[in-house]
Image 1: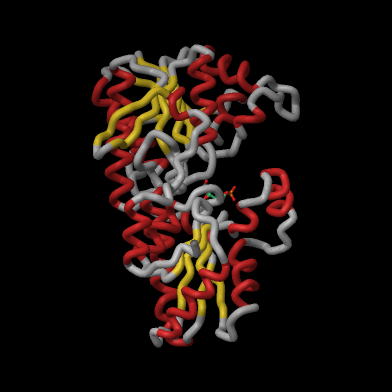
Image 2: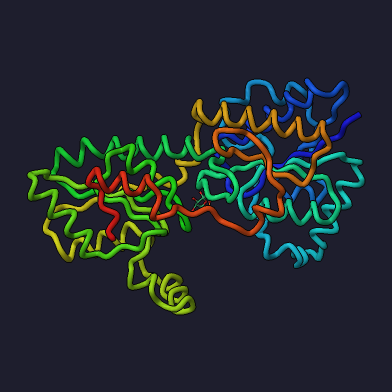
Length: 357
Ligand code: F6P
């Protein structure tokens, strides 16, 4: 009898259920007898021995279902060695649950922080397989995470909808897109939606260049401008400050979010009407797009194969058009940023898109 634990950790995304389904279907095919234990609310469930014993039918009909049937929570890696509010040793309690249920393996569906904890548990002797989740696509070691393409679809749809109203009223629109540290969704949705300006954390902007981009639109008789701005977009002046000072400024920022700050900066320059659109958590909601359903199914199959081979301590990844796996220790603690020198940025600039640099 094979006994596998499964949990979904961190911010949710559209293809978590599709991925769990992929793993389960793979396991039911590859093993004669399988028991799957689903821990509720991510690592919290593993710590608190809070789980459901899952049936094959639990995995039916969920490829289209967003969110996670197990629930999720954020359990920051940096606090893993601190006890819970009621004094529970987090790592010790997770190991105890794993041993108590006599698990052969634990599958962790999570992003950067969750995979760091997965690596920690692997180093502590548990058999762990990671599956790369996040709408942000910032997990180091994989070209693609599940959830990303679905989020890009939604963010693109927002820009598409804004286009017609922006054009009707000759307005400047700022569309704020998720991504505090990285700009993958903004970059892809910005290009797909035909944004005129794309601002991402990896390319700090010079506000004068943004003004220039708006002027260029006006001069070419385009009455409206659309800016796709990542949550973490940052000005050159702030980016160049020493780390401590920068942190202080960001923490004391009086604006509700970057879109409002940008609107204020633009107001000081132009008389044109400015409006803001923020799709927010809709970017994590709804049904996974077909691309993600395929990716998740392939990731799930690979995880089942790794379990069959007892090849643990691995993160399933998509690299150079192949589903493969890398050691969890390789990815732990690293983020995958947009490289400002990448071809995609050069190509976008060739199309006339401004990055404010
Ligand atoms: O990491 C996914 C993500 O959606 C980010 O893009 C976003 O900045 C953040 O989570 C929002 O977090 P929360 O759901 O905790 O508000």
